[in-house]
Image (cartoon, rainbow, N blue to C red; front, side, top):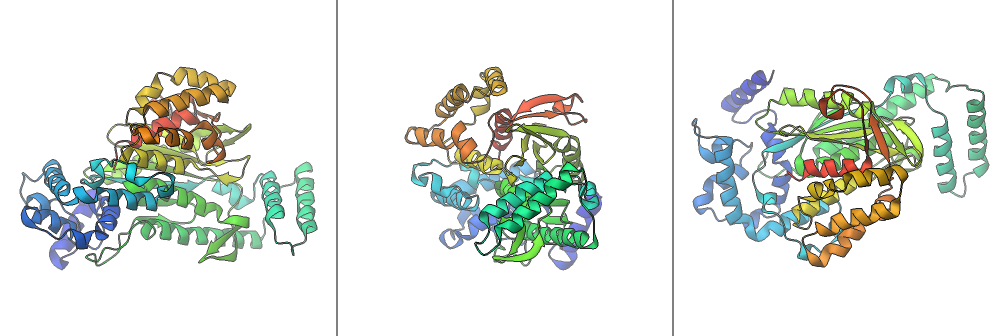
Length: 476
């Protein structure tokens, strides 16, 4: 199939002058082109970097533009050609690239950007892209109405507290009493045509939001492109497959997960207006995010992304704030090293999507900003066993001391040490990002579990944040 796609790609390019679909190289550069588009008028000098400019301004990305159409044109040669010119052309604008990124992933107001020392990789060649595969958990049970009704009680309590004063509070109290009565009598949800219509509408609204998040929200159509970059491959409201540039992949996962549960007050909002479309409630939506090289066989990487979703994310059981739940998990992996991390996407005690993606984005941006060292995982490894014991007993004070020490030691800009340690502290994770630092998980079975051993393994949120950073530090 990949060979057929490649053949079609070059055939349409030869006949019509432009391919009819995007390559993985186009996707890898999608966000980069947005950042470049903001600088284009400032960087017009050609000189010896003509091929570099031709590549950036081309309709579709192809390494032969950088190093010629001959067997000696390899990815490494193309990368060297690109990086040498990027250092010459963009060295004075590297802060603008970082500013665009921190704006897009929404952490720009947390740190003084003037104090950052951006890593040169932010302006270098993009040879990796991200594959996002998601699937609604227990969609079969949801369609049959086999839902834990206690989740509806929590939702109604939230609505009761945030309702308009004109709304009779007694109405919510009455519904809560009815549902508690059904729970007591062990009576399930009655499935009606209205229920199916509401579920169908919720999935359709989710699909539309998925399209916005993957195709338009994080990168614009550069003026030299004749068509937008199409990241979304398919979405049915429950399952989704999309490609994304590495810089904003985590943010896309956050949006796609949030899309499934809709907006505030239990309904979907479209164009800042609430519509009569209730969210698909009762279960979460698990995701697999995989970073792959543009030279990898895409079909194999998509298959691996799906296997990690089914064999790891959907086999994980979390215990957060005293409550246990399964699935609703993000697994992050990469093609070249085999490293992976698993993290929860919601907390049943709060009935809301967690801030895990926001923490990952902050770690990602701090490394690219030259603030946080890449050696955090190795430094943390010396305390991993101690932290594991402290997490088991939920000794937050000592946990906080050790975690803060690791962050402080690995903050490379002295003026920012205290602010970074405060923003990433155990208290901040708990109160600012709604993450239970004592949260634990068990990956129960599956070929992908326990680093491919096939055995169950236990882990915790802090360890998995470090594992995720170990993956993210290699990008973009």
